[in-house]
Length: 415
Image (tube, one colour):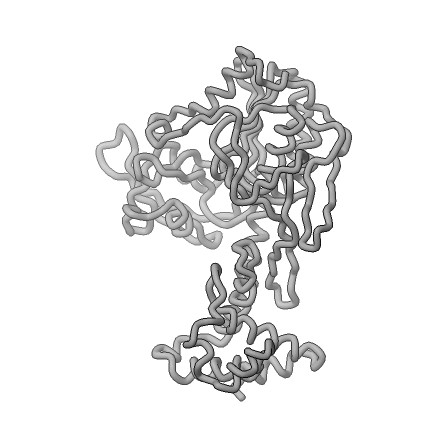
């Protein structure tokens, strides 16, 4: 019995030991991929005839897990570099993956903290919005008062190197991971700036970054724009402040920009949709056993009198689609943009004893009209393409269409 097994035995109550073994062996049998079960793969079961016989009887030989564990520890080519903790957490990831659902996942303590930080809108980094322009990592906007702005980084700066490593060929996610890091550490960016003859090197000391999930703008043409980046911990409070601002300024109309919003808390989506919907269900949950639960508007439709356009695209998912779908079904808004992502499921977060988190899909959801959008998304009334060329030229045809609908009117708009 190896030391890791002994450590688990000493720290785990006897009544839970069977469950621990069962969980880990099932994760092995199911495989360590997100997309499929591998129990039919002879390489996984051929090594133990007894295991095959037991599996055919719809049960498991729990010793098989430790057989594989020991074989990996003794035979793997780089066994001295393998950590018991990584093997253990890897098997739990496989257990979650056996559900064959990309949204049911196990997160170790580090991943769980990063996930919680994202929901809270805080992380450690430089504080700048980064995007791709002409296949080059580009600073879209440094956040006000954050380390990037203080160090002199400017909107439009093209990032050619991060810590002297070229950004050519990097995805935006890869570039962001290289730029982010613990506070009080430094990152060096080599940028090309318009009007400068040579590259500029800017060294930035990372800090704690707080990103607000709601931004508002009262345009000179009388249109009020509310941009929601996530449905996070701070979203509802900031959105309520936006409502007060709208009621004070009495705009010609509202544009609710949900593009590239991956979602977040269900109750926040319900609360936001209720700003337009006075009564009736905002979203309907469908559980596996056929049971349904309706979530109703809270009766405060303070924005219902305003002409509203909702912007969505392929990055609008989950809670974003709940809001867009509810406003569409109740004819409270016109949808403009691209077909949404199509994430029609609800997850529950379960905090575990060691700081890990299990995210489990518990239901699928429908719009108030009974429309399942999972894997098909929501198609806007006005489909407007936003091309790479538009992005490079800093043209936003989707926003322009939304403005047109509000300012010139259209028989298909909600007001």
